[in-house]
Image (cartoon, rainbow, N blue to C red):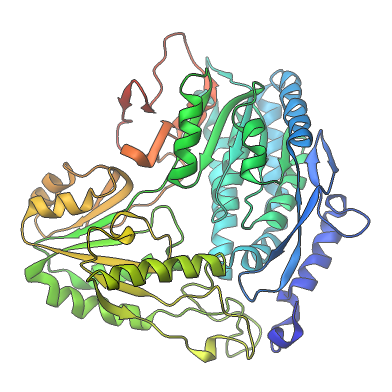
Length: 518
C-alpha cells in the first residue's frame, strides 16, 4: 500500500498486514511468488494471465487476478462435473457435517474476511462484517431446515455461478454452500471488479471441509462459453446487468438447463397522501449504505406534487448528513474505523459513468436538486479519491436521458413529481419490472391498491424491502429476472429435481408462476 496514503491507519487494518495474515491462514492459495491461484480439479494451481487489481479505497495495488483462458477453464468445468458423480452419493448427514465444518472455519476467520472486503470492494467494516455474518447465519438456517426441502428430490449436477462483486459472501458464497448442501458440485467465477482474495479464502476453507467447489478467474467474454453453455453445466446462477443477462437468457432458452438470472431494474419508492416523515427519513438514510451499490437500492422517488415541499424538508437534511470517505479512517480512539455510510464506489470508471449520466440529465432540463461535497477530514492527505462520489439528486430528469430509464447503481437519486395515482404507478414501472418497490401512504387500503399495480417482485407498505434471507423468497418481474426464483425452499428447488411434470416457481419463456407471500 502507498505509505503516503496510509499515514495514521492502524497497522492491523493495513493491506500488507492482511495479506501476511492470509498467507498464514491459507498458504495453499498462493504460488511461490505470492500470487493467488485458481482452484481447479481440487488443487490450487495456475496463476493464468495476471491482471492488476487496485483497491477502490485509495487506488493502491492489491495483487493480480489469475485470469484463465477457455482451455483451462474448460478443464475446471469437466473436473467439477466429474466430482458430482461422487458427491451425489454422499448422504445428507455427511453433507451437513461438511458444510457445518466450513461455517465454523468461516466464523473463525470472519474478521479477516470482512477486512479483506473493505479493501477489495470498499465496503465499510461494519457493513462488511454483516455480509460475512449473513452468509454464515443464512446457511446455518438451511442446515437446520434442509431435510424436508430435499425429501423426494435429487441434485441437478454441476451448478455454475457468475455473480457481481458487491456481495461475494452473503450472496455468492451463501448460494454456493446451499447448492453443495443440496447435493450438487459447484464452480464459480471470481467477479472481475473485486472479491478475489475474500472469495479465494472462503473457497479454500470450503475445500478443506471436503466440499466439491471450484473457483476460477477470467474475463466474461473468455469464460462465458464454458461457464454458461458448456454441456457439463446443469444449472447457471447469474447476478449482473441486463445486457449480459439478456444474452445469457437467449442462449439458454433452447437448452435443457436450469437457470436463475438476477438482473437490474429501477426500484421506485412512491409517496402519496403521506405524513409520517420521521419514519421515511430513517429509511432514506439507511438506503445510502454502501453507496446504493445494491440490486435492491431505491433509485427513484415518485412524489405527489403537493407533498414535495414536505418531502424536500425531510430529504435534503438527510443527504447533507451522509458521511462518506475512506472506510478505514480511524475514530477518536485511533483504534477503530469511524462510522461511514459508504466508502468508494467500485472504481473510478463507475464514478465517471454516473457523472456523465448526471450531466446528461441536467443538460436535458433536469434540476440538480442536490450535489454533495467532499469532507477532507474523511480522507487521508494525498489519497487517491477518484473512486468516490458524493450523494446527488436530480429532480424531474427528462424522459430522453439514460438516467430516466436506468438503474444508476450508485448514490445518484432521481425524483419525479406526479399529480395522479396513474402517473405515480407509471413512473414507478418505468423499467418494465423490478426487484423491490415501496409505497408511503397513510391509508393502508389505498397503499395496497397502488401496490397491486406495481411491476415489482416485492412491494413494501411504508417500509423498504430487501433481498432477504432464510425462508424469504426472492425474484423479479419483467426484465429484472429470468428463470427460477430463489430464497428459502425455492433456492433448493432451483438446484434439485422434483417429481415428473413439476412446475418450478420463476419467470420462464412459457409464463410466470409467483410464489406465495412474495
